[in-house]
Image (cartoon, rainbow, N blue to C red; front, side, top):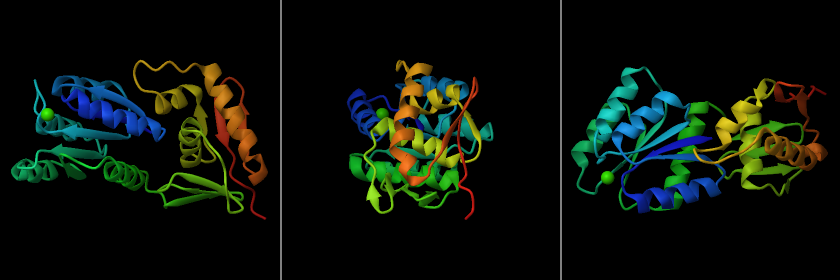
Amino acid sequence: MRILIAEDDAIIADGLSRSLRQAGCAVDWAPSGVDADAALLTAAYDLLILDLGLPRLPGLEVLKRLRARNSSLPVLILTALDGTGDRVRGLDLGADDYMVKPFDLAELEARVRALCRRSAGTAPTIQCGSLVYDQIGRVAQIDGQTVDLSAREIGLLEVLLTRMGRLVSKDQLVDKLCGWGEEVSHNAIEVYVHRLRKKLEAGGVKIATVRGLGYCLERPQPE
Ligand code: CA
C-alpha cells in the first residue's frame, strides 16, 4: 500500500509517516500543494492524505485537479477544527473521508485501512488455502494460529493476496512497498518473498516464482 501525505506541518507529517510505515505502508511526503500535485502525476498511490491548508496550492485545488483527471484515488482530508466550510467543500469535491486536527493516530490508521479496503472492493478477510487474512486487523492466521510476520511481510502478503492468481512484477512490489528515498532492491524483494513463502507453506499457500517476471500467489485448487 503506497500513501501520499500532503501536509506542510513537518511534525504532523513525520508522526503520520512513522506510524503508517510501522503498519507496513510505503509513504511519501509532499510539503506543499504543488509538490502533492506533481507527485500524484508521477506515482501510483493507493491513498492520499490531504491537508487543506497547504502552501503554494491549496488542498482543495489539489483535490479538484485530481478529480478533473478522473482519478478515483481515495482521499482523506485533514482540516482545522474551525474548517467546517472547507470540510463540506472537500467532500463535495470528491474527498472520501475527513479528520479534524488534532486527530488520534490510531483512529486515522483505522480510517486509512477502511478506505483502502473499500477502494479495493474486497471483503474484510481473504482466504487462501487454510490461510485467513484479516484486512482490518492485518493479521494472518493458519488453522486459527497467528503467523508471525514483519511489517514488510504483511505489506507483501497484502499485495499478493489482492492480486491472487495474477502475476505481480518485482517493480510493482517495490512500488507498493517503498516510498521515496527508500532503497529496496530486487534482491531484497527475493529475500522477503522467500521468508514469507516459508512462513506460509504450512497453510498450503504457494507463491510461485515466474522467472524473470515476478511472482504469483496461486489460487488454491478446489477440493
Ligand atoms: Ca497546513
